[in-house]
Length: 477
Image 1 (cartoon, one colour):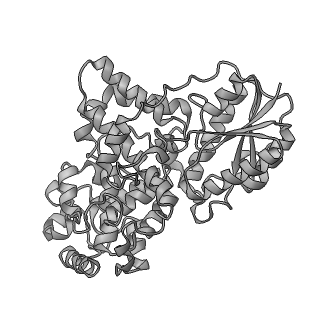
Image 2: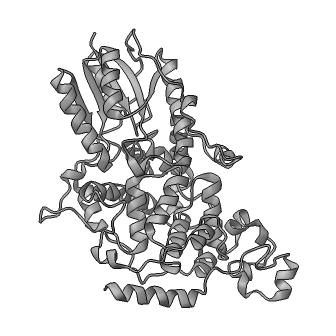
Image 3: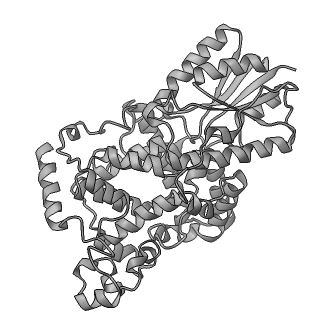
């Protein structure tokens, strides 16, 4: 039988895996591999929290393959060097893989195709980890979409995503398998003491856990999603973002499971519609990245190239470590550091605070999220930060500046989220929890809070900072 090398990347699963399924359907034996390349991505090589997730996802995929009589071959090095070597070592006649959409991967895939086909190797690239081909989505004028609503309307008018494929019942592995690194050799796990402890307690990075999370969300939470998704103390979201990023579940699986849920419900579901539109925002991010490859580094709106940002290492560090003196901001940043994740509503709050209250460039916020998020995704991270900063496609207007005190009072009115992540404020009454700087001295004393010692004083005067931000924006109009 001919042998096909299956190149795994952001599709670390057996279900709905077209390269693997199509190779087996063609009667091929397979060698499954993952290449750890920290050179080709340059500044976008994966960060610390993502490496933690990757370690466990690779262990899970390898275990699943071993249960079927094979294994996952691991190699470190440049894609362009390692993959042709693995093709030769496997005596493979074909390389199958799913498409990547990061700008630096386009050149890699093109070069591999040219080099391997010149040697008589069949190269097949399948649709990647999104629902629709971004190159097929255009406005009536033939240009890329820059506004989400017409983009998503166009997506919904397309042929629905193909039904997900079941995991192969049997896998025919090539009798001769190349040597493999050990995942432990790659030292993906954090070296900082206890950094991964909370992540380990929060997440189970397996394909099975991804499906369980989706099932639980659809059964218990999707109908109240419209409201609950804004409450950081509640489990109102699917929390599937890291599983989607590493492809332990595919967007098509999420799409079809959600639409099946609605069909069984026999009636419309606003929660499900809103949830699918959030998947749509993920699609929109990839559409933007493929059409505007400088999205991770340059503002989508060119006038923001002239924005008078203020780089301030001390303030940036206070933001990173959750020591700004604004409880909802500090809670979010501490949740991020501990768990590798942050509630989406809080992501918007902390992002607005960084770029509009502190006037720190959005690229520095994106870089911190890239290193600390388990769901760090180049398309979503870049598009989301530009949206918050007001310089992206279909972005929130720059003059829309979140007030972190009011946001905390509105979306964490009982204070459960702040008390969970900022325990030094736990004894403050709700009236002052989100604005301890204005609390009477006797209230602070009774709650054992000393501003400037047990909890920071506010990093800025918000009223003054807001005016400074608006004046800065006026300069680039």
